[in-house]
Image 1 (tube, one colour):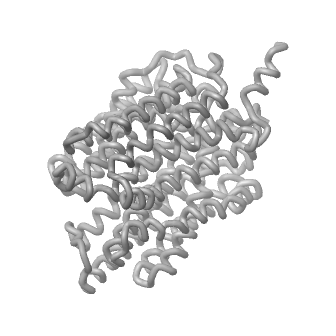
Image 2 (image 1 turned 90 degrees about the vertical axis):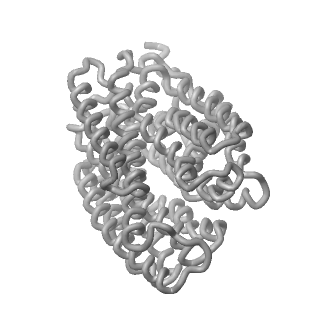
Image 3 (image 1 turned 135 degrees about the vertical axis):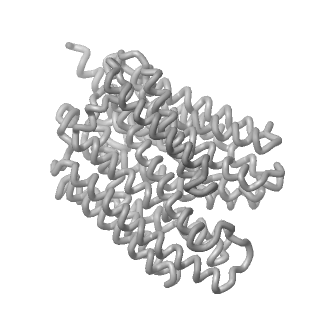
Length: 489
């Protein structure tokens, strides 16, 4: 009993400034795993020329990363809750940095695809744990919210800035350096985690055995679902490969649910979803990611093809998202404190739906109108993503916080795949399956705008319903007090 108080003080910080070393390290780890989602997209033409790759191979250069990343998030979170969060994160960082150096040995597209898939596995071991650990650095609710805000801003900045950073770097170095740079970043992050993040305590972890069948079923279900969305865009929604993927995903999901209900030590205790906070936060996160990915995918095409902008200029055009992520912090925090999570997320959902509806009009009105909609969308993103991330992790048992963060990240990955698939499919169906390079004719530009209008109008309805439905399941409390919230006060 006499050692409890100092032990508790040793593992938490009184302010963000006091925690700057571990917070910076965790943000750096989160940034590099998010930027890798989009960093190589701008370099695909160069990679294709260097490696003699076709279009399909180039699609898998980016798709292999997101497929393994999304499929293994729940498994990685489960392992972290059993074997130690800091330990698994340090292993993930070491593997991620080491694998990134292997790009200098790549000579074929197949080797690069395999390397990207391996990097996705390592990133999956990092993503849920960075969010879980930053949440556990503080006891104070306000500090937890601010720290999660910093993490989300940094992560989304990496996702948005990937093409800009990649395009700028390609003007000076070979494309391989876009991956090589991950190695020193991983080393710095490792040092920060070892210096500032306390070692795992046995009482904070679960002693249950790792649920290997559950892990296999979850990887199959999520991986096949993400692949089905990608395949639908590439091969068609009624193609054999797409239909088989959908059937496999459904079968694996059913098997996962049946196994988890019967298991004495399930990887994901499905009873947690009886908690409105867990259920609602996960659903709302899917909505935000559908909006984010759909808009990012559509506007990258819009700026570079319809406007004819360079990759660097197209990347700079997304800066309103970054600026608003920072500027909206006081507003979203005030909404949460003043009205509680439910109302704050409903406001965020309204901003998301309104901005998407606005984009369906703004695409034909010039950049200023688009930028205004991007600002409104980001206010909604910023509010819903931060509140739901905090609420979801805080509603989990103390020895399942990594699983809560993994569930949060998995919901976002599913939403990202869905948003990209919706916009990509509609543009392919309404405009053209082959977007020609060079100057577009006025007829093709107008056809593209028409496709965008329909895509964003549909997204406005889908995202509005999903995000609102999730928000309604949250509580009215200004702090999450269903589970672990009270003990942190």
